Amino acid sequence: MPKETFAARYENLAQICEFVTIASEAAGLGEADAYCVELATNEACTNIMEYSYGEDKEGKIECLIEADDKGVTIVLRDWGKPFDANEVPEKTFDKPLEKLDLRGIGLRLIRGAMDEVEFEALPVGGNRLTMRKYR
Amino acid sequence: MVESTQFDKVDVIKASGRIDSHTAPELKEAFDGLLEKKRYSLVIDMSEIDFLSSSGVWVLLETQKRCRRRKRGDLVIASANDNIQKTLDLAGLMHFMKMYEDVDAAVGSF
Image 1 (cartoon, rainbow over the protein chains, first blue to last red):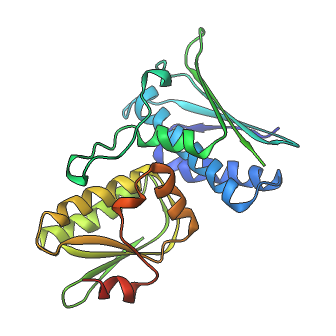
Image 2: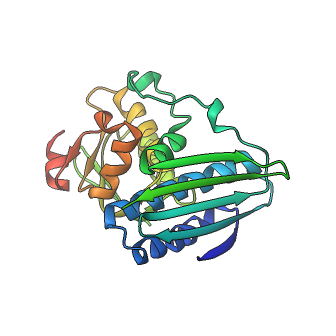
């Protein structure tokens, strides 16, 4: 059950992604599924940095990976502002390019890349995001 | 790392590695530099990009939007691997991008 804590900074995204990719591949996920896990983790961590902590605030992200015979579970914990993803509507980009508003694209990628996604704002503060990818 | 090559009518931008929130500003800067020089026919060579995040998608679409405001202006993609296509597909934005197998085909499309 690998677990690492990272400073919530953009320059650490590559390191966080490498951490989950190594674990995904060790758990037997194929290349395409491992990329989905990497993409979802990247987007989730970016959202934590931008919305939960905000650009100028320091914070940390704890990343826990569990693997079993069904697949991989990624748990991301932060200690920033509570985030309610259920208030963010499902985004579709069916407008002409000139009128396109790309806000919400990260959340769409997370939901599309993973099989199960659960956001929790914790009573003790911060958030926990649990994402599952099946083989 | 981002490099650009100027042809007669078209500029080719080649980036490598990951395009995420840490590296996307460098790509945006390269595109902005070309747009300031009134170069609106652009190709991005993605043959050495192995990861594309929403930040990278945002840079591509914003640049494409600015190019398409000009006559015959566009930003097209060359040599995108399966991962890049996966990001665009999951984002539901594939239909905005013109994609070509290699740089020659992309440059020839203008």
